[in-house]
Amino acid sequence: MAQVNHDVWQGGYECAVSLTCDDGNDTQLHIAAPAMEERGFRGTFYLSCRGNHWRERLQRFAPLHQHGHEVGNHTVGHTCSRNFSDEPGAPGLETMTLEEIEADVLEAERRLGELSPREERSFAYPCYMTHVGAGLTRQSYVPVIAKHFVAGRGFGEYGFSNSPYNCDLACLASTPIEHMRGEQIVGLLDHNLTRGRWLILTMHQIGGARLGTAPTEFERMLDWLDRHRERVHVAPVAEIAAYLRDEVQSGTQA
Ligand SMILES: [Zn+2]
Image 1: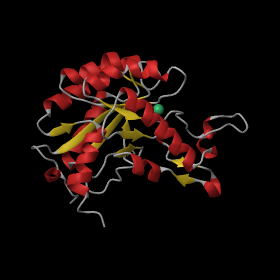
Image 2: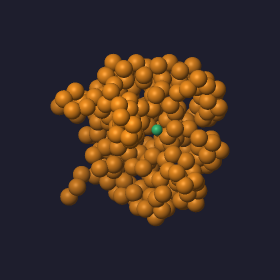
Image 3: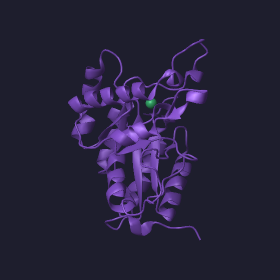
Image 4: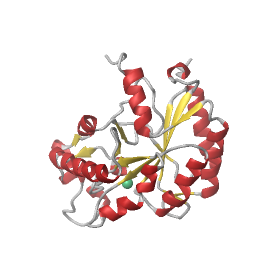
């Protein structure tokens, strides 16, 4: 029989769920965050700090921080694979070094620290990609993230959920729920509860054709979480990660 982790979680909880939103847009400010707050939930919002107007942009999202959500690091450049481009010689993660990606995330941290300061922050890999270089020089930048952050949200093994004992906090699995029906999302939540794991759900915007999670499905998910609030610990990524690091994984790593 599969291992069930219900005893790992404190406060009577049987599993954990983190709601995450990427790239910052108005639907997160005006729909996602208020709907979470209405039910007493807090999420993680990963913002990249690019462009000349990064300060104004982060300022607009300051209410999230003030209301207790985690504002997470999503780099300055939001660099992904160059293979998305057809332009010969296009820049991308393949043309970056570990030093360059480290400088980028630390600059993002400096900018976020100005407007959304927090002791421990989590990071989300842009496009879920965790490498720099290509071919013989391709290497993981997970160790860079492990050095500076309490957690890194990637896509994970099969984009499913995280074992509280065995997940790599610097390379966590998450499940994108864009264009997913409410039944499917609730199915994921149910399954996670049965196993006692940590499910991280990723959204981009509420509604809209591009990477949208429909408002009705989003509400359905929140209602399920509300009904199971005694059993499911809903909290930002940094909070769950710090708990696992300090209370669960510290004594079990080989
Ligand atoms: Zn992104």
